[in-house]
Image (cartoon, rainbow, N blue to C red; front, side, top):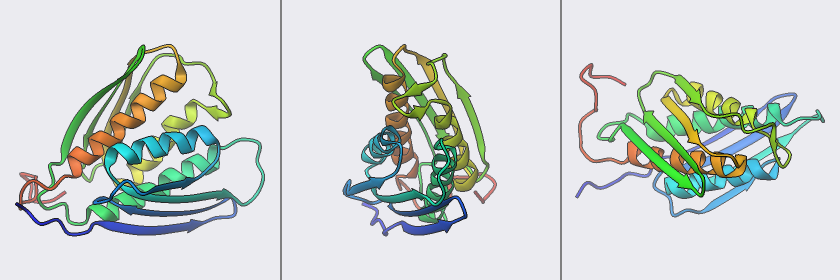
Length: 198
């Protein structure tokens, strides 16, 4: 049995527009506290963290009022991505790859991930309308792009089918959490790369 070291990070980012703080522990006990607007975004982050088996604390606030949540969602992705990259450390022994399908009622979503050191996002899905509550559906892609670019990972996110935007996005974020858990799990002692670097 391989003994796991605690992989964690605390990252803060303050701009003229937002103030974000993220604490992340990959070997967590599902201690999750998310304070972010809009409420459905917090719901998605909590679902992701639960299925990733993380401890996650996010405090995200807007510093100036703008009548949409773009900056807050994108900046949260930036800071969480930085925290994830730091938490992964040297990546020795990690599984590296994972693919997860999650159904939720009529919806089916998939995430395939490579903790590669190379940022790339592929997004595909049906037209789900404009919003779930006060959350603009296009912001899900903006969050994932920011996460991918700052954690330096490859992520293919696909909503295969579904009609209810809530179901489709929640299934996607659950799949993201489970895939991150599987890919970050330490199953060996070597760096999982033929190049010798990630």
